[in-house]
Length: 430
Ligand code: GLC
Image 1 (cartoon, rainbow, N blue to C red):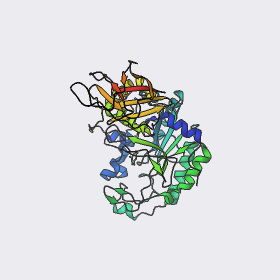
Image 2: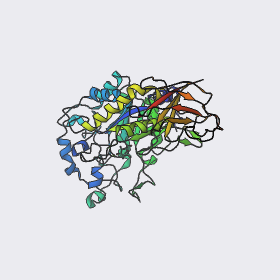
Image 3: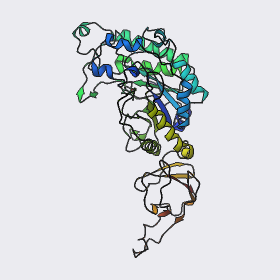
Image 4: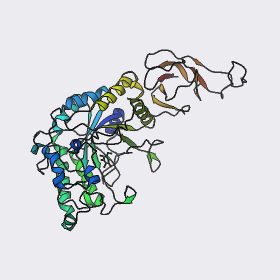
């Protein structure tokens, strides 16, 4: 078993980067109905082949992807090298089912990693343990050919697939310089899919997860491993939900990274309009940091290799907020103080950041902070926020508000909510 967690300096760097871009790109981007379509539609190899033949992302500009991410305040990216469909986005020697055998003919991964390096982004590689194309990957309840009688009669050798998997990981971890994060996906023993236990489900023994982890640490000593190979990893990966508290293992805090979509789908899903607003995404980012997690926000580029209009606009809007509020996110983490309702605190050193998800009339009351704050200002425009500590015994009478519990600091708010996605008040602690 590999030593957990990874090198403390790399862990700290991961925490400081806080906000990352997840990219799901593959043949499924052309089908434009999510990355699970082969499973959903029980698609045969032949019926899936047109996407391979038509893969031609002529608008692919990795620098533009990373520039958009950077402008949104992101500091790292994790990209799919191969998803469950089995298609390889790099020039692997181990399969012909690869990008350099398509009409497009060029490696996707190498220039993307280069674009990340140019902007000092953390480099993360997603790699699917599941493979619906490899002829030796045994059928199971998730496999597209699960109901195909002929495919079910075939002998398949997981050992041969395992070798392929390890060989591909070796390529990915030796060809592109330093890799910060390996994102393996996923083990599903005892896993319920659509309410049912999956037959033939695979896990740690099938991949030899211990060997995979060892290989990764041997080739990339400081790399951070996720928790989906069937063994504990360096960080947890809550998917499409926001943990209600900081995550722990055996009662101790653990590193975690929430992964979230723009519309519920990872791969490009044209007709899906279930889009999260930029304001909601900003609140999710703040909520994550207040619980000491990272947020990995996904974009599924189109078949032409671009971020669609909704994704670009959403990133721009998040960036508008981040430009003025970055210091409550980067380098910040959870606080010991308990925020008032509908608010989140983050803290970095002697600065406490109050994020107001709602907008109360005139006043917000901060328990326990009466003697602790030397100055307060809005973060977006540095306008002072006036503070007072009221007499706790004050009875309610006419315009005199009833006293707040001893130790409460009251901040006076303007009637109009500032025009930013989430207003933030910066409190200088003393
Ligand atoms: C999943 C899915 C998937 C997606 C991912 C991201 O479990 O199978 O399509 O890539 O995890 O978290």
